[in-house]
Amino acid sequence: MELGALILFTDRLDEVVAFYQAIGAPLEIEDHEDGVPHFACDLGPVHFAVFEGTDGKPPPSRAAGGTMPASSSLH
Image (cartoon, rainbow, N blue to C red; front, side, top):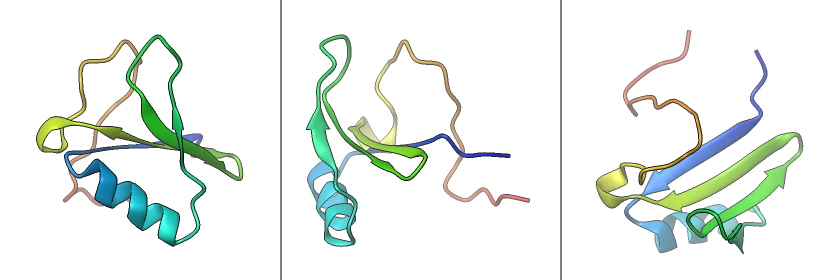
C-alpha cells in the first residue's frame, strides 16, 4: 500500500498550519479557483494538504475520498 496524499480537515486551521510549518512542512496557500482555498505542499511523493472544516468535518467536496475516525488504528 502506498500513500499518495494526506488531507487534514480542522476547525483550528491557523494553529494546525503553524504547527506543521514549525516542524518543517513548507505549507503554502493554494487556490485552484474551483474549490476551497487551503494550505498544501509535497513531502516527497506525498501531497499534504490542510483544509478548514467546521468542527473538524470536511466541507462538501467534489473530490472522491474517504474518512477515518481519529480513534481508528491501522492494521
